[in-house]
Image (cartoon, rainbow over all chains, first blue to last red; front, side):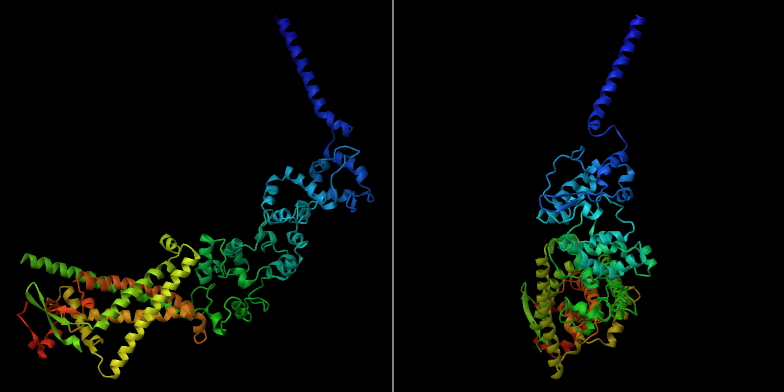
Length: 373
Length: 243
């Protein structure tokens, strides 16, 4: 019995060993077909670069465009992917052998649009977000130049997208050059570019990143003040720059703000004309209030008001109290009106209540007395 | 003036004497005030309290906001016509030296108020005697006189802000907005507490609608006026005995 058992055990061990060898062999076999052995990723890269490190390597696409097939080993080595061990095949999913299989791409753009699909293998969450973006919508509408992952992030040279932070804005500027030109002279852009300020918004802080939305919709418009408030209602952040963090809460109580809040909560898709932050301050070209070029500088304020209130006269600007606390210096009319009502209202109403209460008591007492007589 | 004449009407076979208290025009003015102020209040409150569910139920779409504002403005014009009539009539009567002084506040009103407070605090045993309008009624009139003045002026400022800032400084617009919405609430509460108590709960006084007051109420609440009317020979017109 014991012998048989032992023999059984050794048989099972041998069987397990054979199965393991078979499994490894099966697993390794396809790789063996293209490579001498299972290599570390960098070895794969080395294998590919053995041809693609030739700067003159290129091909002509059916469209007639010349496609350089050169991949700089230095660029690759400085990218974020290569040092992490991510192989060429990870992205070039259809090429795993030499000679390479025939590729279906007719031109450079369709090649890019074909390859970038590979990004979702690892970056599925961000890829899914791009499906909901303005950029993807443009592509759906037939604009094949609408950006794909690699247009912003690069391909072989992919880097962290925000180091330094100004990279984000220059990335957007590749297509949105005119807006970048406005932005770089704005209070936000100049602080970013000249001082490497880490607090000011870059494009993506307001527009979103992968799911960037159309900023021209009514919905975007009514939500925009809250977006500005993300920084401008932050007392700690505003304190650093000696700015008021009450601008949003005060705006919310202003004529414009109340109207916008109602539309935002109830009719976000219906057009309306009550001013949001950007209507007065500008959008990409926002400047310091003290800057003579600012649309809300006292010299330009009436012109800005007149964009909506066309017939307004010079006194009109005095009616705007939307960013200041009620005070004798800043808003004397409102100050005295409020002072009057904070004293008059309780006085006259308490007087009425007390007088009427006394009348009720006295008439009740009188009535009881009469009935007792 | 017809308001000093005595009237006689038959009720349950017994003669009840009535005193003319308000002219037809005054009764119409009061009705117009009730109607216009009620509409202004009902269309103003939802605009003031836009966060509330009842406001949102009424202001269900941007078009409804415009509609409610239009109704508010229409009622405001009715009220404005009433103000013009009231002030115009006052000026005409003043020019003709026929403006009755009954509603003007006097030193006697202050003394009456003092006496009344003494009575209400059980310091004094009897109420003061009043003329045609007691100090409570004068307070109601003058409170509303100025309240409606403030509401009308501030209302026009926020209705026509650009035109007003052609003359006035811009600061009056937010001030008018604050005054309009606060004054409206104060006035409403004042009417509910003060006026409604005096004309509905203390006693049901419908003389502003009927135009006349019966003899008993006249004697109880306006004794000085009652005595004055009886002395001026009006007594001769009395038919039937006293109630």
